[in-house]
Amino acid sequence: MSLSIIHSRAIAGLRALPVQVEADLANGLPNFSIVGLPDTAVREARDRVRAAITNSGFDFPQRRVTVNLAPADLPKDSGRFDLPIALGILVASGQIKSPHLNSLISRWEFVGELSLTGNLLPIRGAFALAMGVLHQAQGHRSLVLPYSNRDEVSLTASSQFGFAKSLRDVTDFLAGAKELETISTLNNTTVINITPHLEWSDIKGQERAKRAALIAVAGGHNLLMMGAPGLGKSMIASRMPALLPPLSHQEACELASIKSLDHTTVLPDSDPSIASQNMAAVAAATWREPPYRSPHHSTPARALIGGGQPVRPGEISLAHHGILFLDELPEFSRDSLESLREPLETGEISIARVRERLRLPAKVMLVAAMNPCPCGYFGAPNAQRLCNCPPDRIMRYRMRISGPLLDRFDMVITLEALPPSTLLESKETANLNLELANQVAQAREIQKSRQQELNAKALIQKLDPHLALDLRSQTLLQKTAEKFGWSARAWNRVLRVARTVADLESTPSISVQHLSEAIEMRRALQL
Image (tube, rainbow, N blue to C red):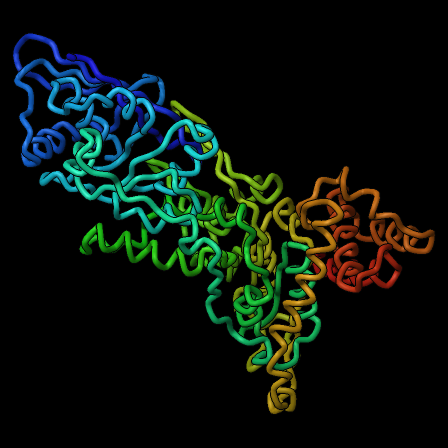
């Protein structure tokens, strides 16, 4: 056989697209070429594959070797095609012999980067590839991956995957000499090991801000906190994850797929195999934990929304189904802030490339904090020092946040300075975290049983029947909207917040008290 076809997968966003690796051996001067829109890492596979084959005890054919990655118009990146390329060459040259060879290579797909010694190294996007095989192959195909990705892929709760440590392990499997290691469906998939959270009882005073945070978490609403330095804005935001319930299995799988595309936590001087296993072990222990991301204000737009070549998920995608906290909001670049407008509205981020357009999920709850002016003390009655910022400078500072972005915040809260006597008060109940988390869980359960989504993210068609107001509430909302010149989006977001307040009280209808609280939470938007 001088031609072989091995099945593999490419990553496009979160999609795992099938790729056929065709290897052809022809007579002529010895040459090795790879075609099919490969990137630099794939083109470099020629040297890795040649060394891995010879160091694994096989002969690299002294013929004209052509490898085609089909379809040709699909971009291919990274070293995950090393293994299928090597297998294609070995099968085409007849160095793997088995009566069941054709059956095996038609039922299995292969991904993995090869070292020069023939060992398999961990690959980026292993979990996303595994989920793609589960959803698209529907049991007709299985996937061989590097053993170093075993813990990560075991979170799928499927035994449809095989793991190998080297090229030799895979060839022995195809020859019928050994079996690949698989995972148990009971392996760590139900573990919920939430990281210990900071205590809400540490926060002294600021009852209105804490109430706003509770409402925001209960309904998934975007929240902006304003106030002088040291009043507790960051402190409140850092404790909001304690109120989030564990992710569902589907949500955890979506987040794990995104995280598998991002391997920036691997230290460059660490052993790739060990680093990958350590990352997977952490993921297995905390994979049901909602994410909390807090990028520095110097973070560029590409790191915030994602990009690069190959595409890496940004902070907003890594916070999918969790909280994205932006401290010192006006200090972020204009490009970074404006790039948030689309994903906050649609729940996904679109990344355009010359050859492709990718979409990554980004359903986040945006929590932000800012000072009222550059020095931070504008309007603070008992501040350590008076604000000396000129009015035009304050205006320029606040104008860094555009109107369309500001309009996407459901609630804006101004934190007031606390009297010293408040700081001397004893802590609240030690079970405050559990008490508030139970309130959030109950409110979220009401929302999901009603419209399958949180109030902030639900389609208006599903939520609209539950936003009905009595005559008194209608009059209040209309007068307030006219007074502040609210847009249709602002009107809708106030109603969503009011619906969440009612859900926290397990009330089927929105009362004027619920609406009044929602309106009060938005009045500070008139900066």
